[in-house]
Amino acid sequence: MILDAPQKAPLLPDEGDHTPIEAPPSYEDTFKVLSPTTVGLTEPKSLSGGPYSASLRSPLHSPSSIAGPSSPTVQKACATQGKRNWLQWGRSRTEKDVRATVLGLVKDLVREHHSDSSAPAGILQSCAAACEGRSLFLSSILQERSIENHTPLYWAIVKRRPDEHVDEKAQIPDLLIALLSHSTPLTKDTILDIRQACLITSDQPLFQRLRMSPEFATVSGKDQMLLGVTLPHDEIEVEELAGDEGQFAMDFVIPHFQKRMMVTQEIVLEFIARSRMWKLTFAIAGHNPPNAGAWAFPSPPPVNAPKTGSWTITLGLQDSSPPTWLDSRLVIPDPSIPGDPLSGPASPASSPPPTDIPSFFQSASMTFGFQSKPPPAGRPPITIRLPCRDRLQVGNHIMVCLEDNPAAATLQYAGNPYIGADEKLRGRLEGRLKVPDADCTIC
Image 1 (cartoon, rainbow, N blue to C red):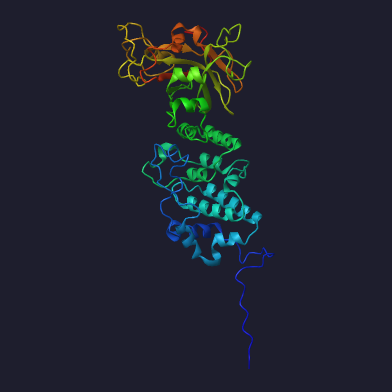
Image 2: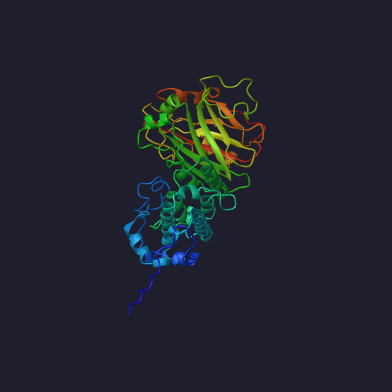
């Protein structure tokens, strides 16, 4: 008797049948399948040399690497999971289903916020592989405002622990870095969403490290030619002091100050202080004046706008910063004064004999609430008042001309003693969120 051979079940569903063999794995199953112990994920490798590996991890230790989506280790481990493998399931689903599943997994990652786990990196790698199989781009999905009208990057920053609470010895990248590594190139809308998150959390250290990354770099083409491949970034340190007047200070170091002013004609410093995003700009009048016609000039206001070619300083609010009164001043110390935190290599110009003129740093304790310092020997610092006649808000700014201050006007001259031998300009912006004193005048 001849018996028909039993029919074998097809290994794959028909091409026209998009019904999954079984239900998609739950979020918990996904973590179990993609956990480092099950999948065999080693220390992440895809961030090595990436745009965020150096900027975001400093001062944290940068991870050496994150295995890419096509890593043989990940493929071999995932292959052992059979039909429950999420990647295998992704191949049998429609593009719409895969996209919806990826969005759900990313939302769960952000909601749980596994900042100290390698699980986010592993899951995002698997999502990238699944998207690639369906001609989807994970970078585009991660930049959609899919979670309460914001991107996953926004929520990762809002829920991120402050830098002072992050373990500097940790070698595993946090959720934000994992998301950023799969999101490039970033769109302008995504960058705005990230800036908004930094402003909401007042995360100045993170904001500065983001600004040093290529995606956020504001360095012009002329600056790149002038400064070279290894850009010496402008250094910014912000200090917020205790008190009821909202005192803050911002120390800065600008490399090749005079060359950049003459060639690019604009140097922009952005920072976050007192729950506001600020923009301090050194520029030459006639070159892209910010918000022309919306100036909050010091009192009394000038009759005419700055003359073309004049060196100017402007200070204003950025993005969605709330309006405020501001009383501030800019100080440029003598770089030859030893022991000053802003001092660098001494200027080649000879220093005059010590004077008895009280320094700005000494008088600042009474005016701005900063700790008093003994008067240093050498030249007194250049001080420039930046009082505001009206309440400062986004869309207007304070502008002063260096020509209005004889000492400040010399910053545009070669061999100026207030610019260090390393061609760096060191300065300090000090302010308080209050109505300027009635007797304030431009120094």
